[in-house]
Image (cartoon, rainbow, N blue to C red):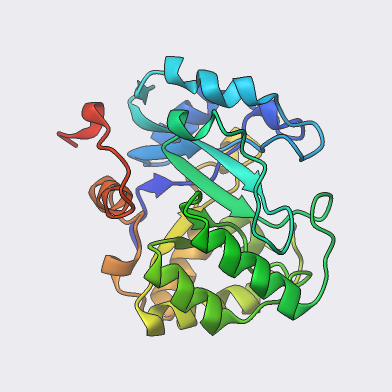
Length: 247
């Protein structure tokens, strides 16, 4: 499947990634992306930047190295109440927020606890997508979360890094099962490389193969084109990004 938007990428600001924003943009262009989101880790992840880093993204150009740049963050799910570590002043400066479980912040617990946390973070209205849900350390009720995400216009990520087997080992089969449930309920899929080094950004071989294998309709994949991604942001009630109107 054609994928033209990478919605999950990191720079060295995350503390455990190794490329600059400009290096990421160059790689995005080389790998055929029309748009990418820069989504460094928020404050509770060890090594992550101060919240001023995210608030100051307003200075970033909307196009870098010929690719549209979306200002974002990967925030941490903190607890079963669905709280996330986004500073209250940061929301207005961000276009795109992924919420993810990370072991240093949310210790793996029960299926019920994970499901409750995911449902509550969806209902909070503060996040646009759920990141790398295939992680076997964080089992959850696929159907309940997929239905809730559809109702609240939250996308569920297929993470290419998870499918490569290096990080979050054991995610591959789970990712396919989750994607099939999202397909069945009519929800939305987003795609992220979770690139921590620029050479991985925009490379979606594993995700593309999975989407083709399960015959996921392109209308449910918000990263199929930049236009679909921007339409999804509008569906979520986000203000139009003036520089992207003619894309």
